[in-house]
Amino acid sequence: MTDVNTTTQGGRLTKDPELKMIGETNKVSFSIASDEPKRKGQDESYTSFFDVELWGRKAEVVAEYFKKGDPIIVEGKLRQDRWPDKDSGEKRSKLFIKASDFYFMPKQKA
Image (cartoon, rainbow, N blue to C red):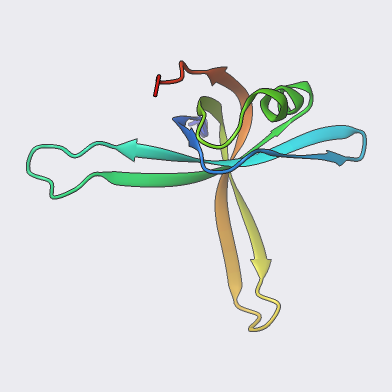
C-alpha cells in the first residue's frame, strides 16, 4: 500500500501573509479559517484554523495579492513539526499545510 498525504482546504486569511527569504528562496506563511456551516440538528457552526506555508515564486504572488480576510484555496500536504518545550522538555507538535499550489476565489461584495 502506498501512503497518501494530500489536502485541499479553502478559507479566509486570518492575517496578512508574512514573506521571508530563506537562503535564496522565498517562503510565505499565513493562516486560514475554514467555516463549516451549521447543519440540521447542530447547535452552531464550526471553524477550523490551518497554518500554511508556501515556497518560491508562488509565495511571492500570495504575499503580493492577498491580505487578511481574502478567500483562498490551498493544495498540499499535511506536515508535522515536533520539538521539545524549552521550559518543561515535554514533546510538542503542530500540524500545518505545506502548500504546493493555491487558487484565487471570488471576493464577496460588501
